[in-house]
Image (cartoon, rainbow, N blue to C red; front, side, top):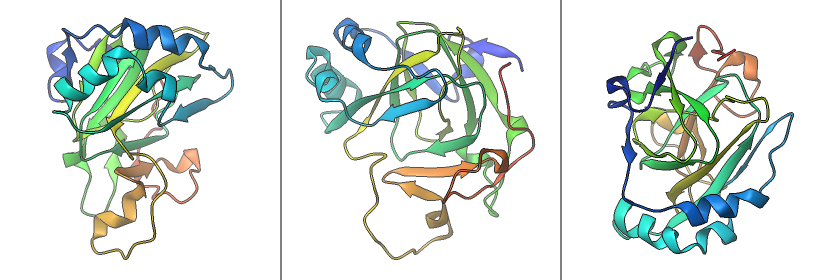
Length: 206
């Protein structure tokens, strides 16, 4: 599939490039995090990253003082597999070059299906900070290099953690996969407990 850049006009509906915050301390803190060769690892909250000086500036400036968590997503991946969205923007700090496959929540049908042909792919160069809007469908990044990818993931505190028991009230509740995380999977991905509502190709950047 065609790969655009986050500096292209086409990225504007999905997010924006953030400038003005020095996150070099967080990037240095990522040096000791693992990067599996055969899978993707996601850690919602990493104490060492949250202790970095720039973490408070991210909370103050990009989340208006709300409590945040800073974690990471590392590994090797070339497939879409699923899409998720949150009620809040997600901040990504690309430690390596990476590719995001993005779509729009508004294109999920009332029947909870989504056509993967509506998605676009964007290159995020190493060192770039982006805001991914709340209505942007996204999932794990894809590799640019054979060595894998590393990205810092900033979200409101508690996001992507285990849900407490609750009584479903709306149709959308079927998609609620974790706290502040609604998810649709592709049937080929076999993600247990998810709604396999993605139609079309399980997109690959290879």
